[in-house]
Image 1 (cartoon, rainbow, N blue to C red):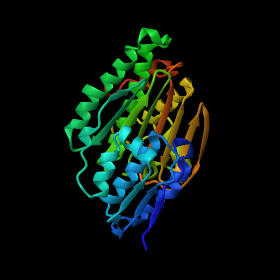
Image 2: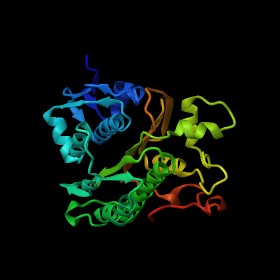
Image 3: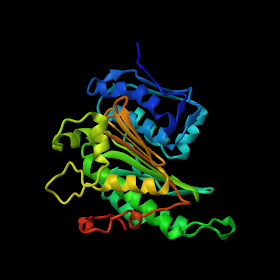
Image 4: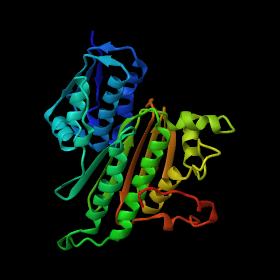
Length: 320
């Protein structure tokens, strides 16, 4: 009898806990080659960019880690259209058919009044880092600098671009430094003139397992995740790694009245417009970061209190 992974009807960031519960069994199948697994997406009525990314990521993990064989993806028209629109369809088809995925098809696109910028974080391929620095980030910056005059949108274009690029860079740097076992993650920036979202998910070393060994006390999973949000907390002591990336993201979220959601290895930390909650949830190997930025109240490093102190003199910010 085949195993069915039934994806929830509403597959969005707002219902992410249901998704995590639905797929966590996959992580227990590593190297078990379970046959005829069906990823059932037939009943999905709503799916956002987070849902698309996470569905890609769980199937990629299942194939790459020999969890399944001869698997099947069942989708409806809504899901197929969304997967194609956001460039995940060919990737998923390649994995289901156990063929090599072509990540170089991922590209920055303007669709109507919003943009989508997915890029693969291929650790062994210079393509990724060069493309992010020389292609993706300048295009995002250009998008906000060149708002058509007839839109009558009054935002600080330079500050909006700076905020998005800063957050994109910090999330990217966090994954590159910690998710060393995961070589096929995708980071996505998506937005319009009102908001921007940045989403990334890996299935490598999560925040819990990397930070726990360096803490001096025994903490619960959710306390470790909350601890990771503090200034100068790092799993890489005695190095030039400052441990400020997640703290910076959290501060910008607070000041701009945005959202920052982090899930890692059975724990979550949510910052909803400055209100914090944490707890334990279904297991996800690695880390998921979701960030929602309001562009009407953009904030940057210069707005963070005491950021200019001598403690930060050696802080390295990528791509600025």
